[in-house]
Image 1 (cartoon, rainbow, N blue to C red):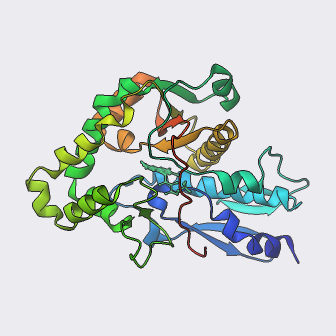
Image 2: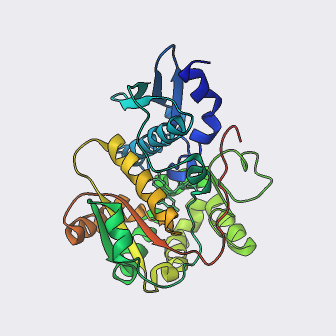
Image 3: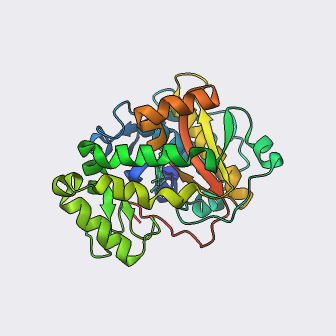
Amino acid sequence: MSWVEQLRASEAICRRAPSAHNTQPWRPEYHADEITIGVDPARSLPDSDPTGRDLTLGIGAFVETCLIVSAELGLAVTAAPGPRLIPAANRYPTPFTIADIEARRVARGPYTPGYIDAAVLADLGPGIVHVPTRDLVSDLAVADRWLFSTPAVAVELRDWLRLRPRHPRYHLDGLTDRALALSGYEARFLSAALRAYPVTRRLGLPALLAASGRGLLRYDGTVLVLLADDDDHVAAGRRLLRTWLTLARHGLAVHPLSQLIDCPATAGRLAERVGGQPLAVFRVGRPRAEPVRSARLGG
Ligand SMILES: Cc1cc2nc3c(=O)[nH]c(=O)nc-3n(C[C@H](O)[C@H](O)[C@H](O)COP(=O)(O)O)c2cc1C
């Protein structure tokens, strides 16, 4: 088998890469001696991610995942602009393995209080800024309210929610009730509220939903912000994945809070606070309950 065929045979592992709303926007195309990573336009989020920031970060995370898989398979592969995967002189140097890729997951439930160690932060390298959770409590409420009161953004989220196991796409993509760590009652409430969205918006749903997330950062914990170092967001997505895998090696899970950089008011304040351009924001900690494995197309 050629290296392209070998990597293709492992596509299901590469698909464990994370993506916003679990859209899995990557479209790998297999050629004789190269793999191009295209984007499936039906899996982009034009209203919630109009600049394509999260889309490109997800593509970068997929590229990095492919490289980790290729290294473990003993294949000499590297990434090139496009992005593309092309032959290389040596295996991709990485400390990570397929087991790390399979074990990584986002955890949205409560975390044990405590800041992450300075040693862990040092392990993450430059371009990552620490913010205490409590400093972002009120901005998260503003950002959540913005999210649920901006119709196009709320409706796009609704389209990727799979809140009942009977949902036809429950095991394929999007965000399930279990991945969101919702109780049966919370899932039914969110589902009903978003189904009747234009009406519930007028009834004050945004304030109610924002209030329900208010407790999320009310503990002494860590939020990390990944800063842009240039315009190459594919490279930043690769860095994001390495960051999440490094944290996972320390037993730490992540929970992205991208609304803080999507909402114009809170985005500006966050950029000022961290002194740079935030590309990803996520709380980090030890989840109190084991997070679920998220769905993927093709298993
Ligand atoms: C660029 C990016 C942005 C994300 N933003 C959010 C977010 O704002 N809120 C959230 O709960 N999850 C967010 N996620 C996590 C995805 O929803 C998650 O990766 C996906 O559902 C797959 O789950 P898994 O990572 O546990 O495999 C984001 C992921 C990426 C890569």
